[in-house]
Image (cartoon, rainbow, N blue to C red; front, top):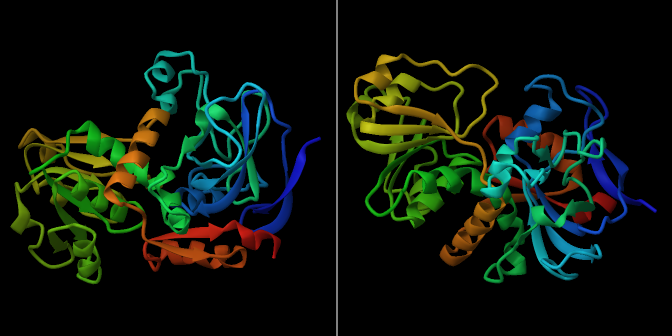
Length: 352
């Protein structure tokens, strides 16, 4: 019989979270049942719950940063065993037959990747995410948490399942390494992980933030410079100085001013997902052969690679661990930029 597990759910637009019992399916032969220990809050959860990306289907249980332990496996599963520490990221199914899937880029599945929540699976059922006590996932979409991470670090590992791969993937794709001049725009939930990863890759990292309030944090995370963009002339002083900009914000910044800090042939990578259109002038690109590109997350092989890289270099997110009753308030705190730097829910509090 399907299993009922404690979860948090939003029943309708504008409503607060409610404690519910969520139904998880019986295991199929290639399924893994995971007892969730921690669920990260991504800003995309907030966009979905608050209908800022278009129409949302309710009720919704968000969460695509998931860390837990395998408690049951299907009859055909060989990659994972009961007791394994595992993670689930932004999607839980794909065709695994198209060119993108065969290249290990399931996020671009030609049939359509199935999101961890707010998506319709190939079986016609609506997916519900990680703000819950358990999740059942096709084994291909489950990654291993490296042994180098202690149990005490698992809460801080959780955001790597989205924030980690979202920043690691483009940094790797554009060959960031020793001596690469990287600017990270925004020191928030995404940006602070990007700083840590870029620094571990050997880059010289500058944080672009509105004020100096986070300067000490950025330097402690591996940055070598901080630019307070609200100060007059701050961006002009960095003209033609960077090979790559990782833009984790999008909304409310001077894109033309930031693009001007790129050197000849430099690239701005947009990983933030603002609700409004990005706006910049053509000559901001043409003048110095600059590029503006976008990047999603990585596929399953790259996600495992990212976790192994972070384990090797001692990288975790900087987190605030919260309980079930704190989630509504923390949504507002995240929007206001008052969280240092990622909120993670302890799912043991769902039954309290």
